[in-house]
Image (tube, rainbow, N blue to C red; front, side, top):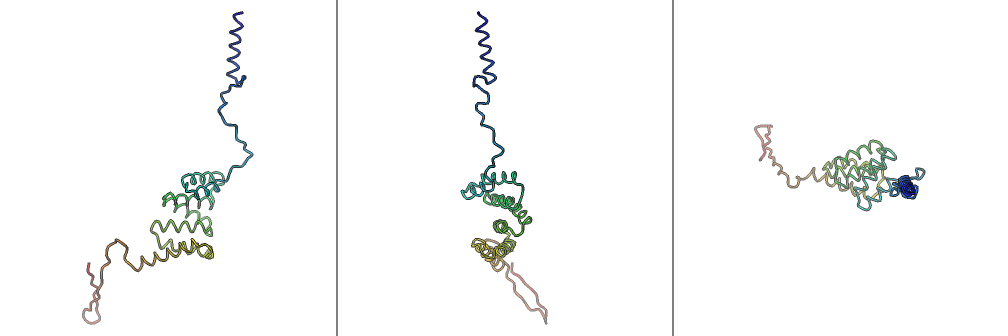
Length: 188
């Protein structure tokens, strides 16, 4: 008789360890994913996060989209835009240049590359890029038109005026020396 309670205890412990009584080591695990179902597009999630100002999360969503769909012009442009918003201008420029190389007619990549170039002080190159985006867009988008106007104004102001806070440009005087010979003098 004494063996019966010991045997019952042993059977009870064996049932607990194998999940036979409803106790399982997997009780806290979520159910397995159904591979037949499609998740939400990473680009769409990233665009929504960018609109909400969540640039770090948007970057992660874009990276997920890259893993799911591969590297294409949409993904490169989105990654470049997220890096631009995070002030990672070098990375943004590289990604957007690759996007423009893949599809030179993709207007958003052209425009965003122009913005990066403006931020990096490459005003002349930005002007050319904005002109290309404006031409590809046929002047339809107001933001591209405004970016082009700003790039033109900045490029012309740097050509015709001295840089703000920079060294003062020397003043040149032309002096005649003899007959037909001139000397260029400067005051530094």
